[in-house]
Image (cartoon, rainbow, N blue to C red; front, side):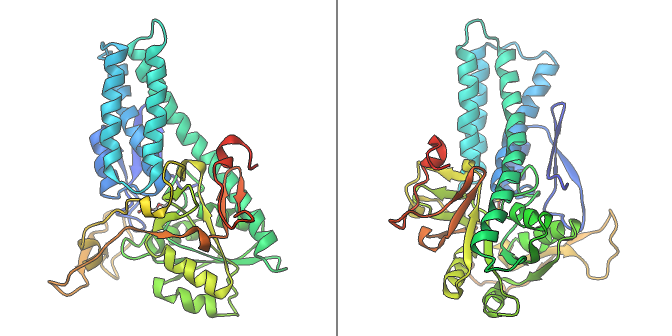
Length: 382
Ligand SMILES: CSC[C@H]1O[C@H](OP(=O)(O)O)[C@H](O)[C@@H]1O
């Protein structure tokens, strides 16, 4: 399986996603500053992946101190250090909730450890490192459950009697956006594993091109029958009855308590198209992406990114050989001087979402046409 993140014996490496799919290079992340910049620069991206890399960057830093016996600070001092570093890491990207959720949970772990009678600074640091590693393992387990739950739901509610389905996905939500397998792309993988996938379609996802560079890379790697389309082709694809798209499955960066969902820019447009064409629209996300503290989509901060991501594009020169030394070049593609708007995400209202696929099950709206997501956390839904 493709691995965006490798963590072993305190050493963290990430696959530099700015160079994919043409160059596969793992780069070391040794400090929280390395982690912050890798997330900000989108060398690693994807809501779950940025949370995992942020926590493991701090874990790598602490491992270095623990292993070299430099950690002489008191439990309180180590806890304070971790708290400050977590607050710094959370500033790297604002929209995805997973990062803030992970920081909150792991801060609670170290706070509890600090309060334990006779605890040491070493034990507080070690508790953090273990919790960060455990988080990565749980994400992979959750993704496989999301994949299964989504594939089962689609077979029942979207296949329209067909034994195989065609699905469209947006952005990258696979092994390159998580600890492995993926969320929405995990549903595609599960459909393929169950031999119920007729074809997968992926959008290029301008301007960062997570779809054409990353999702297409994963689908080709896994030999899943798939076709790349430009974002502007989605409407024509849904209108094509010969293709017969059964469902659109996307990921999420933050699902608000009412089900409104922040996801990659272009998601909202796909949801409107799905509603118009009677195609099921599904959001796939672990519960770590569901933010019960945010009431609705209007309360979600949308990250604005640099104009250069729209006015230029990166890749190897056409015709250059696929070698390890391939040169990634930058090409300008917009008129100098034009203003640019580059929101990284948009909000899809819950009214356009037919189901939210989680690791514990697929949530649908109640008789009141509203999502009641609290039951995902107290066990009352599933
Ligand atoms: C499972 S990835 C979730 C989500 O994160 C991506 O955003 P980005 O590539 O900017 O980090 C995209 O919105 C995915 O759907």
